[in-house]
Image (cartoon, rainbow, N blue to C red):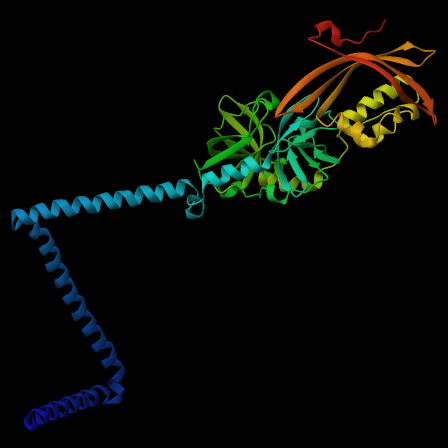
Length: 422
């Protein structure tokens, strides 16, 4: 044991003396020290590089020659080479697929969840002259296309659960074809958030949602899939357009187009031969300050005449301004009803269209009227047509509804829709 310890001590002493001598030669004389650093560094780096090159050449030669040393080696090379190429090709294809979806953040988004959110947030917009779609952009604000509500002072918003409501305020930008409908209730669970189409990649999947053919096609919202093509226009032009290959149909105007994660990148505007155009989400947000009420249709009524009172009564029903309509009922009529009972008679009415009024009996203030109602019943729109008379009475400076004799008309002819001027 002692000789072994002595050998270790002798070895350590020898290493110490050699290291001390090496450092002494390296440091002195001092004026040669910088040159020695450069020289020694270059020498050892060159030596290391040469050794690495030699080892690399030997390794490459070994790899190239290994498959040919035996049939077994050759078979293993083919097997593992095929496995490597398969995974390399799969990785390339996977990365290409991820890029097509707009990156990893969008690739792992669930299309099923996005579809569910769209079906919860996209609504029908029903007016007297047109129908379309819309979607919630705030708790009580629904965005749609202006042409959907053009010339309609009281469009209806049909929610996904089948109920409907009437906007309490409408604003918009007619030139940009955008309209914002504000309602009295709040639906924070239905809001869709905006994204930017600038973040889209070529051929990235997009989803457009809306109600094709409006209320003529019953059921929930339709979600159509396509791909992003390009952005047209520029901010200097006023707004940008997102182009896709989605084929939209009538009734889907005003609905959203979203990316895989459900972020709104545009609003459905127009479609032609398999090419569709959407006002970009960036432009929509830039246009908010331009929204106004100068082009919004207004309701004008005048109950100072019997005919005017009848027209005002049905106009209030159309706009679902039930309190004002109730005020047009005479004192005698109110003895037979109250506000709640009277309002429940019209709870399903989406729209009222008056086709004509005329004085039937001026002495008794009786007015003949033709009109139709659109009723929303069990998720379907039903049309009903009526004609008959209202006797009015002058109270508090306006004519009010006293007694009615209104009957439903089954399958009216084409001529029926023209007002009877005789």
